Image (spheres, rainbow, N blue to C red):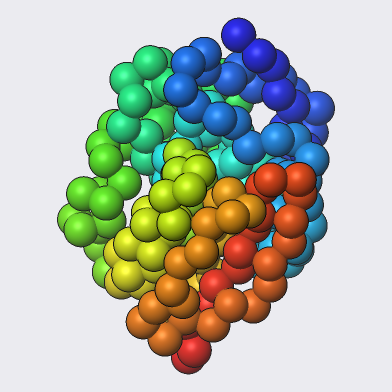
Length: 195
C-alpha cells in the first residue's frame, strides 16, 4: 500500500495510505499545486471531495482550515482506507469536535452522481472531482459532472476537475473555465459559474 503525504497546513508531512487496486491517487505534487491555486479560498470553506479514493485531497483541505469536508467514494475497498485516513487525522466522522474551530467531516459511500442528485442545494464552496480517467473516452464523466455539480455549489464557488490530458468535454451550462494547468498526463481545470 503506497504512502502519500499531506502537502500543507497543520498536518503537513503526515502520511496518508493509498488504496490498492483501481484507484489512482492524486499525486502529492498535483495536490500541492491545486491548493496553491486555490490559495485563500480554502480556509473556512465547505469542501466536497468526489471520487475521493484515499481522501488525501479532502484531508489537505481540512489541514488548511476548511470548516467542513465531505468525501464521496463508491469503491468499498477504497472506502476502508479512506475511513482509516480520516479517522487518523480528524477523528470519527460526524462526532462533535472538541474544538469548535475543527473541521466538520462526513464520509459517504455512494456513486458521485447519485450523491449530487440528493445533495442539498448550494452546500459547498469548493468541489473537487477526480473521476477514473477514461483514456480515449472523450471525458464523458467530466461533461456530466459539470451539469451535476452546479446545484451543489454556492454562488461564487469553484469546481476543480482532475482529468486526462486528452479528454475533451463541453464547458456546459454557463460555466467559465478560469484556469487549466497540466502535469504530465494530468490536467486540473478550474471552473466557476458567473454570479
